[in-house]
Length: 492
Image (tube, rainbow, N blue to C red):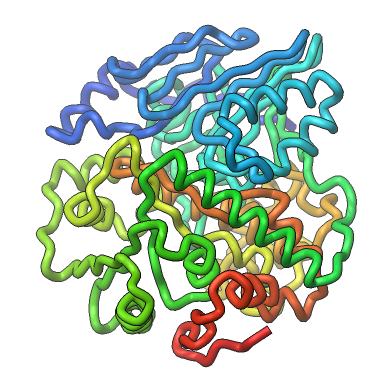
């Protein structure tokens, strides 16, 4: 049963007028009010209520589109096929091509067929959402490969898709804060959010804008197994091209840790970016390892590196904390964006290059949980090892998730797919949404073809991070001399 067909409680109290609620949010944010729903967007079947400084685009197939001025808007069309993009998009094969070139190629592929469009899209990287329409077919909405550009949707008395839950709340009548909220742990259970009737759109699924139903568009076939060296070389090409594109178009700052994923990014970026590492407290073991590695490698290899020493920095004002609670439904290190601004600066031309996402292709859940998902119960156990979270309510949430996303129909290793679509789609998207008030965020790994390559190698090669280790050995072999999270680097 679709969300739209569900009957609303006739006695449900209507929330405050949307404009009144928006004005309250602006007041709570104080001098930070311009960061309200930073780099956000809304797509709605009725004219939306948005901050006064936002930009409105021409309606697309009956839907209104508005967005923060900092969110890039690109559009292209070929014959009866149209594609529009909100956010940063580029083709990982062509580092000299512009975002407009990428959209033009996507529109041309869509004019050929929807399958050709999806194949073309698999090479795209960045952080974006797309709306596309081919001829008389329904318009469709989807996110980047891992949903780094968050998409939440609502389908009751109206239809809304947005980057921010509170923006949906402003523009709907039946999206109150839940009276019995779910507890998040690396994402809410299933596709739930803390607002009633507001859901996550998980990566690899799309919304049919006519029926407003969720459809899976990837994977539709098994991933072909490749020789590890062949896959590694193709992967390195994607990583090199992606960094070249990002660094040619923006001023980059790159987080540096002692982990394998960060090491691979470092081997690609080399000395062509500014690096930083944050330190919270001596009790944080990972922070101590990160700082030890970052100090050593930056000294030895002459890397431009900054330490963000959190204990010595002021706490953000209350208005900043208010803003974070409005903008985000999951708070991850909520004070860190303020500290980023103090130490690194911010602005439209700065991009933070993160190194999350690679664990999708490294069997993270398979190694950690020892559970293979065959039911909603096992999905719940994958989501959290805490037995107190294995409640019937959470299991029902994952049962709904599996039904709506057609999770069990996807022909791919399921622990990796779940990490990709649920943890990265639901948790990681909120991590980067939280820093949008300072700068844009991208990841070299956020390309479906790169992730497919990581999943294409034998199981043992995935478990041992073989592709990343070969990338480091090939791109900057000196980095093999330093331990990874305190353990010796295993040479490929």
